[in-house]
Amino acid sequence: MSEAGHAIVVMGVSGCGKTSVGAGLAARLKAPFVEGDELHPEANVAKMAAGLPLTDHDRRPWLQTIAARIAAEPAPVIVVSCSALRRAYRDLLRTESARPVAFVYLHGSEALLASRMNARRDHFMPSALLASQLATLESPQGEPGVVTVDVGGTIAEIIAAAAAPFVSTILPD
Image (cartoon, rainbow, N blue to C red):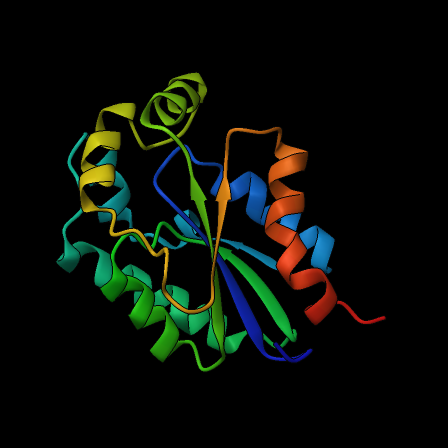
């Protein structure tokens, strides 16, 4: 990667730590962080809060908003959290973001993810939707520009593993 014009999307199912890892990665890279959940249309948030999974039709405008936000960012690097569950969603981000996009895939066991979701307070996504997210997930492993990080460690360990591939290529000396 060059030193300018990149986006890093921290992705995975709900409960994997996208917000915490994304914010930590952005701080480490001295880059702005955008919480993708904040860009959901109100109808999507209401649907998920009601325990209903989103469809591809529901997700498309949200993904386009994320891509537009990435494209509009003046900073040389931006970190964004986004579930990006399907290859088609990642491809949309790759093609519509107007800059190279790398993905940090946060991977964990269903039991660990459910435990984290059940411990959260004040989040619109109920743990009952974890199974539908896992069913929707198309693993990005093997796709170009994807770093896979296991989320079984501490938040500091996870952020360090997520940052490692980017620190020498993005941070100035």
